[in-house]
View 1 (cartoon, rainbow, N blue to C red):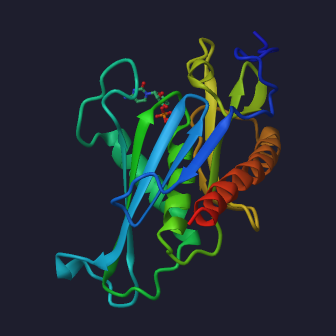
View 2 (tube, rainbow, N blue to C red):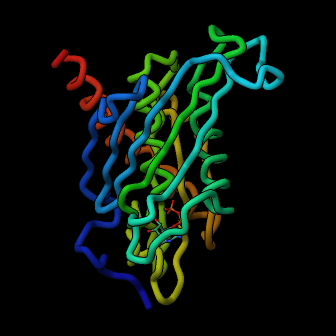
Length: 232
Ligand code: CDP
C-alpha cells in the first residue's frame, strides 16, 4: 500500500522538531543534548587526557573512543544494562562518523572519550547521538574541521522520506532505514548504513534529502554552541 500521508502529519521531506543545548553535563570537558521528536541523546566528552594502559597509546596522535548506551528507561520495555551487540555496533559507527572531522595530531599518547547516552528513544538514536557528540567535541575545544550532522532517510510504502519515527521504522509492510552522517561544509559523507531496500535511482534523491536536512541541523547545532558562549 502506498504511504500517501505520514502518520504524524509531516511532509515527506520534513524532520521532526529539533532542540539542542550545549554544556548540559557540568563534570565533562564538553557536553551537549540533541533532541529530535521524542528521541533525546546526551553526549559528554572527557579529554584529551593520558591514555592508560600505556601500550594502547599512539605517539603520533591522540585516540578517539566512543561509547553508545541506551538508558534502561529509554523505551517502554526495560533495556538490559551493559553492552550489547547493537550498542557495540553503534559505538563503532559513531566513532567512524566523527573521526573525519576530528584532528588529534596535537595530542600524542592521549585519548578523547565520547559517551553517548540515549535518554529517550523513538528511532534515529544513532543520528541524534552523532549530532550531540559533534557539539560536545566542539564544546570541549577539540580541533575539528567541521561539525558532523546526521539524519536517517527512509523508504516507507514506496516513498522516500526523511527522519523516520518508530511508527515508520516498524511499518507493517516493511520499511527502509538509511542513516547518513555528513560534514556539511563539503557534504562529505562519514556514515552511510542501509537497513532494508532502496532502488538505485532513489539513492541520489535520498542523499540530496540528507544534504538538505544536514544544513538545517547544522544551523541548530551552531545556534546552541553560540548560545552557550554568548552567555559566558
Ligand atoms: O535508534 P536507531 O534508529 O539508530 O537504531 P535501530 O537499531 O534501528 O533502533 C530503532 C529504534 O528501535 C530505537 O531508536 C528504539 O526506539 C527502538 N529500540 C528498542 O525499542 N529497543 C532496543 N533494544 C533497541 C531499539
